[in-house]
Image (tube, rainbow, N blue to C red):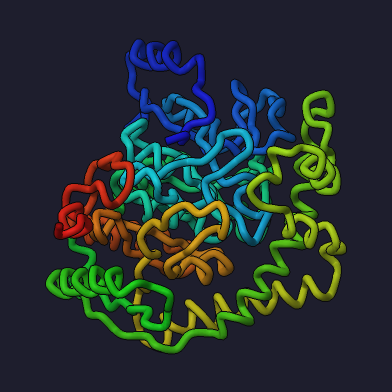
Length: 464
């Protein structure tokens, strides 16, 4: 599947040492966990999938990694990803990096694993590790989790440190758990959440974090008013049919469902979001590159990376770097165009988006299909997303959970649970209650294609 870029050569000895400890540190003691390869560890390079960073080994743990180790977890290795977390091109192939090649979806190997935490999603779905850490700017945890048929949780921005993670946007970036169950996601989140003096966004994290596993309640759907986002489009009829079936499950569990049909102007919001990401990419990536060792990383700025890509045939063999070029042309964060775009996107996604929908409809959370089933990887035309609800919680910085809800022709699809800032425990609990009723996860078939999946193969074969 090309889901793992590198294995930690110390993992076995570290697990043996964990087993030898007389006192368990908690539920993660001795647990192997994979990390997306834009997260720094002291014992492996951090490449973000780019050949420009293949020697980037500063010998330091990101604070979230230090928290995992303190909880007794064993870092098993680094997962493949969409190179530079899928911010290089508008015509990219998700799951591909020049270092790791193409990550394949374990449910059908010719299908895409979605980006940019593709390797984390595919590896957990395939059983290579019980948990992985992904990162998201907009959909990069929830999409690969849903498409690979696992649980993915994007926390409130500021709950988990972003220090020593290759960045896109300080407004929207966050790391989060990708697991086979909501309970496991809650356990991992409890370990990695917390304030970091090097990341100002996390100043409230220690005061806001709770024991997320203890907060899970299998009866939390009973009596809960939940908004159904009916305005999202782009989904296939089959995906919507699976979603409608699961709305019945929620009603049977006592949930009161309220249809919501009005949304903020998605075109204006999306345009403003892209402007923000381009400005912040230039600023934040330049700052990250400046923090690396010059004897290991010779590309010290975004402009250097652009020049490196132009000189390296493998980098631009499948798609270009037009978003990098647009970002390089931007000014600083004091530019009025940036400040206006950030205010506009935040207002439409937050105050006039999720906050308004929840307040006016008197609901405690919002739900919708996370995205459609995995598309056939297409290196000519790029990605083919089948709908998404990730943008508003991504811009607003609010929690977003996806839980498996069923299958479309053998390919998994997920249901999203979204709520307001710092309502991470509530979102996880609602998703946990849904999961206990459905148990819609299944082992992948590793089929060469959807046509070779046993359930649909007879329908795809010719009659004579």
